[in-house]
Length: 379
Image 1: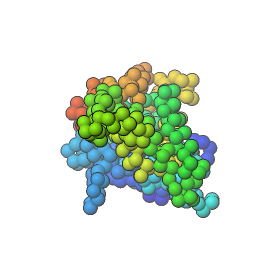
Image 2: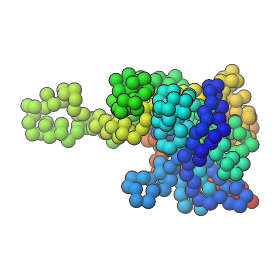
Image 3: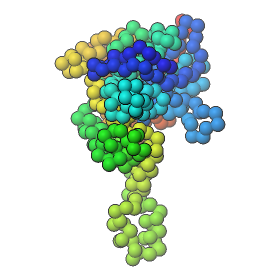
Image 4: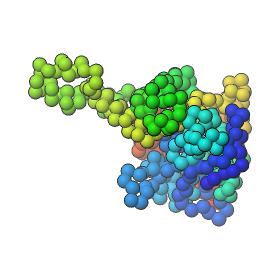
């Protein structure tokens, strides 16, 4: 969907002539009361469910959650996925042409925030004729967007599902993001963010950024269970076949000797093939900036007083990047304002990635909550 009217941004800049890529699932009912907006996290997109005809490995990033008969049932709800501005999956971003210069935006693309994304999503819903959402839902950075929706457009949201998220990032999270960004901007192929003009990609920086991210998404238990201190097959073969060569192999600076090293390198290589470096910088900055309590002297209860909808907050015990205590901060602030809130803390071993996985207790919580929303919509 193309928009000609300029979008004012939190930075004071504005973006004109932009487009938003989006997908919809299910059928919008007659009074347009069954719409659910699903907000994506860092490296995801508008393609939240289903597969594309004739395309292998095209499954939506939350396909285990959304679809006919699933927790968010598309036979009951009209689900909308929107690719955020600044992303690299169709919506206007750094890879697109800057009309002022005739070249790709690169690092000249304006800074965007969670609030800017929500404002853009609201414009898309305006064009679709959807004035109130049955629910807005997201995990991680998507959960921040869901929370922001309840503050910027409280009259337009019936329910908010905020999963594996936080009211802001702590210093440790910001530090991880900064290390990842430095890996990208110090890559010799970055060229100040205008690497498109040079026909190169800062793959080395992207690989390291993704490896750092993966370490923070997994729990210590999962890493030990999946990989432990296991050597790769090549190292074991060297050990079993020619033990005299093992010392030299293991102390190589190039080979991935442990399985966890191989896994991280694989994830980094894959990420560098499809994700845009400038998008990574933009989105991690949006994560860093999000803090609805900033304008209220750090008082989250005051900040969330504007919210009027009902909430489901979900956290996972081993998620140390968005720890349960951060979700409980949101719960407390909502209860301080006498809002209706349900809270589920799932004892799952998977770390932050748990919100994307198939834990039956988690899925049943979400399914049960949406069953209640469906009853409200049908009344």
